[in-house]
Length: 555
Image (cartoon, rainbow, N blue to C red; front, side, top):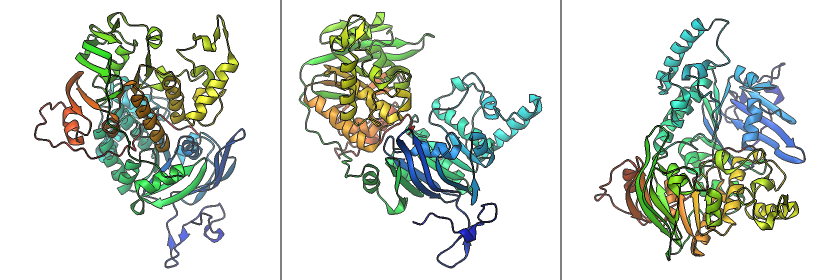
């Protein structure tokens, strides 16, 4: 594909009225976005190298690649967060120099970030107008904004209470606010970074309806995602990046999940989890009548009982927000239970007194938390310090007040190499790794401890398809080595393909247990609170596991 603009199509200001159509010689509309030779380095590392990209107006264009492939860096250049070291950017045929996000917004580019840029204690309306209030007095501007917000909400099915506080809204509605912000600023080109990473399946479906409607009304959508099924379902064209370079662009209809996966990783990728039968052994974890309430007295976990044995993976399925997170945190000692009993290797965990997570680690429990930023990492610390968090008192890392920095550095290097963390720089701050590579740091720290039981929440959130394959293999290897694993994931395919037994949670309680191979339809009904699924067929068909729910990709 030739991505260079013909000089004859450019005006004296660098604009292009369009591009010659090779079929009939007529001038076709200029693409919404054209990037030519974009390069960006951070020190000696190329985040983007000689990138050419064309995005047609009125289309949904996917950008995919492994963690650290350069997707978000490229979009950050387009949105003005970074400036390219080399290259040209054309917007609707006009050469543009995008120096900051204000310039991007001014020329019609909006961006919905994976980590929402909202003020929690402001209302929806206040967040939408923030920065574009419309004059010294707010009253008139706010009233005009309210009318415009209603118009946009009605036109694009983005209905939301303008007076609701952001902190009171679920993440799906918060994302709508971000889209409304961009549309309110007259965005004609909309960039979405991992938009479904925190959405339920129903919320994701609604988002896709919104995106199709935006496209049909002439908007251009650029979608960064790891989820290949979403790419196949929603995009018109997809571009694939690998290690900072663009390796190909294809029409989605002419491609397949398998082809895109191979382009991303550079090798054949196994899209199914291969595992033998489980051979459960002794009971490692027992939960009896566990109840958890929040500070307001609202019941989050209701009378939950189950057990996990050595040599098996027990998956907990459920729509996000139905008590799975609180259940895991109570078992791990991060949240105090109101009542109930938990036994680890036959000995009690004092969950009603808020157990000590450090003590639980010494007793053979490892924990990969769902939110790596909030509870899994200290992002201002380098990889070396994050690799020993929670284990820093072990003798192998030093004695007394002094740490053995050489030993820590060596272990970090080894673990990063084994888990393919990029860049392989143990002294780099965790904040400077992409979201998927941050996840690999946490997984490496916990999975390398040889625990009796691993509590793992969202193991492949923000992780690329090649790393998903690796992580799934490691979890199966742990199971086959006789370890117990309690798995929570919003990815139903992941639950179905990895679990030996599946518990389904709804409204804080367990509504039933099902064996591996239970159909998605049956589990979906249970996740909606339907406990009697006797008329739903169960399928033992193998499950593809290509989904992830990412937290960002910074490089």
